[in-house]
Amino acid sequence: MTPRAKFATTLLRTAAALSRATGRGDGSVIGGRVGLIVEPRLLELLAEGRHVVLISGTNGKTTTTRFTTAALEAIGRVATNSFGANMPTGHTTALAKAPKAEYAALECDEHYLGQLLDAARPKVVALLNLSRDQLDRAMEVTALAAKWRQTLQASAGQTTIVANADDPLIVWAASVCERVVWVAAGQSWTADSAICPNCGAHLDRFGEFWRCTNCGLNRPSPQWSVAHQGEAVVGPDGRRYDLNLQLPGRVNRANAATALAVASLFGVDPAQAAPRLSEVASVAGRYAKVERDGRHLRLLLAKNPAGWLESFDMIEPNPPVVLSLNAREVDGFDTSWIYDVDFTSLAGRKVVVTGDRRTDLAVRLEVDGVDFLVVDDVRAAIAAVPPGPVEVVANYTAFQDIRAEFNRVN
Ligand SMILES: [Zn+2]
Image 1 (cartoon, rainbow, N blue to C red):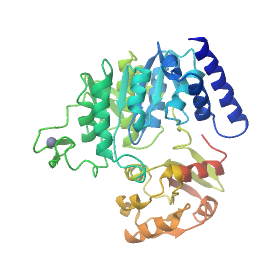
Image 2: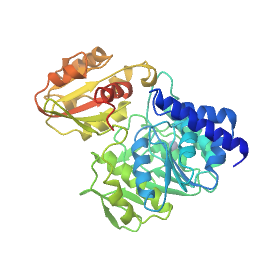
Image 3: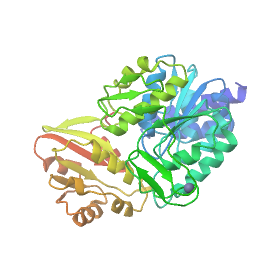
């Protein structure tokens, strides 16, 4: 490290500590910003000599990063941006805070993948899925896949890609790389991949398989998959690794499969890594269980149509459901995406809606024929349901509001 980089790192830590002390969050973003102003190459310098994995995609990247960190900790110290600060400022802070970590597991915002490939020179990049997200400001999803494809072609070099064989956009983006490990991570949301990203022709689907009717782009055969029966991941040699996850749903078993595939590329025995994943109980408040007045709430974060669909797959069949929707800056101001979500699976159960945009949700539920009750906030929602289990699904700032209500539960 140059004297300038050392000075930048000291300033970064000071700025982050000040931000924390004044209650402005964990300080990752401001710390990284200060460090990068003093030494613009700070991220690159801090990443040098470490074994790095980048994890990106629309959904599941925070959880997969957490699983990967848990798996890699079997063999050494791991630097990670566990608070979801997934842009270069957050990555710089994560590395600066863990100077002795030989490994780094970094969650990466989809739009910064190219920048991180150049700066962090990762050994592995995991690509989970791409679907519509934040309509008013995010890049259209096929354009984003095209950008990834270009970036990977230019910069992936010796990097191994761990990619989801079930998502045609991911397959198209990753298939320019020489070394790809395919994971059958599933795709419950197919509305963004009805047509071939390569040529625009119709994609045929039969069972798990998909294929372009024109150019032949098709589902590669996966080396890693989630077992059809029971909670397990099946590895490249057909060996089965039992999971006993605390986190719910098929989608989290798929995230676990990706984490095991990544960790094995770093030399971690999956049999040693798998039990570590079951120790993860919540991820930055996601899946956390909290209790108030006899109501046992489980908190699920869902930020976009694919995320909401996945959360409906995770919830237990009987308990009341609280849905909370905001449309502040980080959520995206446009809520029309709720019309992309099929809410009919909630029909027949008790549904309570809240959040800044609760009336938008109410209209949407009305259209889908789901009965609901509108309330002002999460306290009123709790009062409106009987004691017992309650499933709560909220988008980003709505979720943070609920976490704040429970003193930022982790
Ligand atoms: Zn095609």
